[in-house]
Length: 143
Picture 1: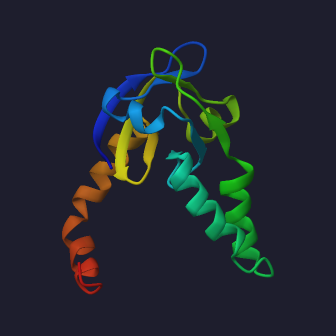
Picture 2: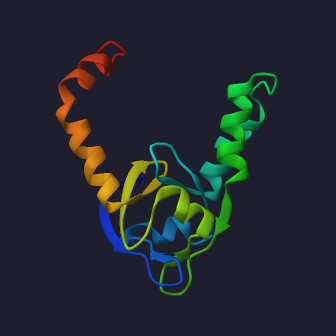
């Protein structure tokens, strides 16, 4: 289970250190892909397989389904932590998420999200301001 917020720096080679508490879960490799809200999603290989199978089984006759599958699947890259627990983020994914130096790693149960620290701060500020409305809407879903 991935939870918490962590700040790490992207090095000059495009590597980021995975928070130490998550390294064991990612030791056998992981998949990083384009996420939503201008961030990257990082999955264990097992979680990625579950998601990829769901995407592959969606009806490809629908344009939105094809677009979302392309976003997630074509943008994906397998990564493996090095001896220092760093993973290499491909340039096209760094550009997509606007990652430069300071990165926020956010744990969201079955995945990690990698955010530009400035985008993360703006996103959380906006979300915190709307927290009551969000909670009310989720209450209708039984949460």
